Each structure stands twice: as C-alpha cells, then as structure tokens.
Length: 136
Ligand code: GTP
Ligand code: MG
Image (cartoon, rainbow, N blue to C red; front, side, top):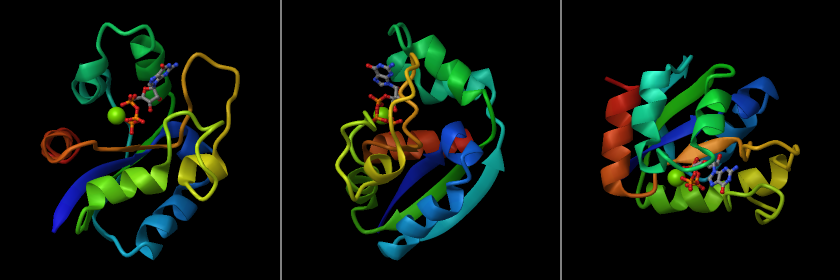
C-alpha cells in the first residue's frame, strides 16, 4: 500500500466542496487515514512549496494558501499517489478533463493564482516529506 498527502485548498473549503472532494476519494476506494482542518502558516507553506521558491507565482500562491483554512488528509491505497493525481486532473482547472475534481468543480477566476481546489503529492518522497510537514 502507499500513502499521499492531499490538501483541499482554501478555494475548495470556502466554496463548500470539501465533502464532495472527500467523497470522490472514498468512492474510488481510498482510505482517509488522517484528516484535519488547519490554518496554514507561512513557514509550513514555504516548506511545502520549497520546489517553487523563486518562481513568479510563488508569493501569490502562498498568499492564496493563507487566505483561509485548508483540509489536510493522509490518503492510503495501492498506487494512490498516481491515482489521486489522476482524480484531481491537470493543474489548470479551465482545461482539466471533465470527470476530474478540477475539471468538474474548478474554473479560471481571472486571478494570478491557479485556484485549483486540491493538492496531491507527486512522488513517494514528496508524500513522506509533505506528511511530515502537515502531520508532525
Ligand atoms: P499541486 O497538486 O497543488 O502541487 O498542483 P500541481 O502539481 O498540479 O502543480 P505544481 O506543483 O506545478 O504547482 C503548485 C501550485 O502552484 C498549482 O497547483 C497552482 O496552484 C500553482 N501554479 C503552478 N504553476 C503555475 C503557473 O504557471 N502559474 C500560476 N499562476 N500558478 C501556478
Ligand atoms: Mg505539485
């Protein structure tokens, strides 16, 4: 089995989509192993997004992630890292495939940041690193 870190980002929580998003994860057969509503801090986000430091979208991304609470979850299942990213869809919600979380529930809002509802770890190493940041 494998585990991944999933975040319902502030846009998902504010729009009241947490239940639908978690329901899709459970309906696919994955298990919620840990779940928490948290207000992030700049320190957590700078660690979480360390690969993006210095990119033009980094600061707007951090500000957005500080704009409201997020739901953090450890999700378990065979090949869940790949499986959840497939369920989430492409980064840009306007063109993410229908059937995915971002494709069905997201769109562009004309802002600097891609408000794309969810985060999912992209490798086993990222998953362990990110779980350590959000659940310590
Ligand atoms: P996550 O699951 O959130 O990590 O999404 P991802 O892996 O599809 O995207 P990535 O890790 O490359 O980027 C992290 C987040 O930064 C994205 O989810 C977006 O919110 C934002 N982002 C990434 N690339 C861009 C970009 O080119 N422009 C803008 N404005 N935002 C971006
Ligand atoms: Mg990423």
